[in-house]
Length: 100
Image 1: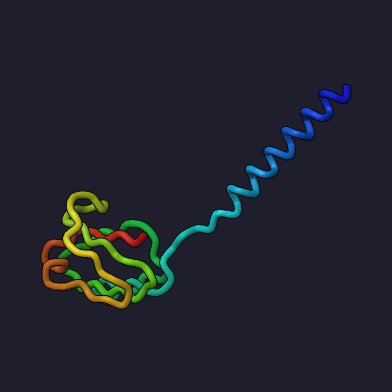
Image 2 (image 1 turned 180 degrees about the vertical axis):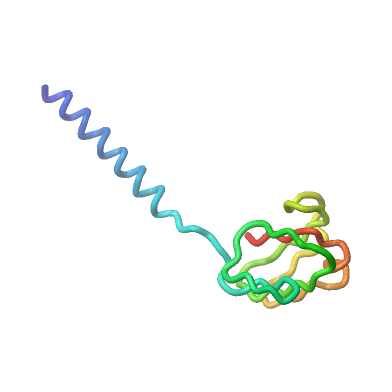
């Protein structure tokens, strides 16, 4: 009986520790604003498709990666640093952006 109780307590402790580890991981999102042709995205995270030639302004605390294909696939054509602006290549060739 005591072995079963000890085993159950051990399993509960391990499960609790795992749950704390999973919940302690913060959701990572950039802090600030990503401006895509005048449309502001607050605290962006992930991939955003671009439609047409767009101005890209990165007013976040993270780098923005500009891809030459939709869904953040293909080649990176530019990396825009925090507080940076996409250049002509990003505007002409960019089809999506990813914020890490």
